[in-house]
Length: 93
Image 1 (cartoon, one colour):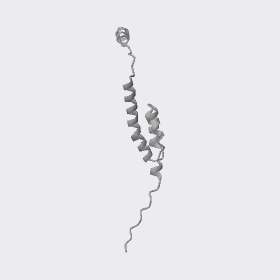
Image 2 (cartoon, one colour):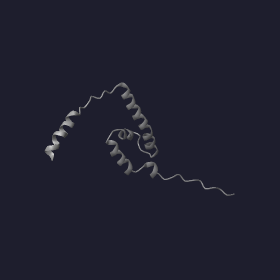
Image 3 (cartoon, one colour):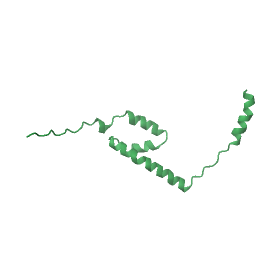
Image 4 (cartoon, rainbow, N blue to C red):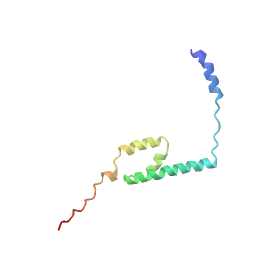
């Protein structure tokens, strides 16, 4: 069965040619815009949980963002672990 399919598969694979991808100036502008639009909420979330905002860079790098997400999920969050401020008791006179 393999010998029958091999020429057909090879003809399909050999007919596919990889084209060169031209990254024009608009593509670079679009890429930077997407990175900035993703970085803003990520840095705000990291700041709210009390972590360093430099972690944003790790979340923007492909495959490293998966590792950073696991570290982020299992790390201690300083803003959450901090004891809540004591509320003043109401005075009844």
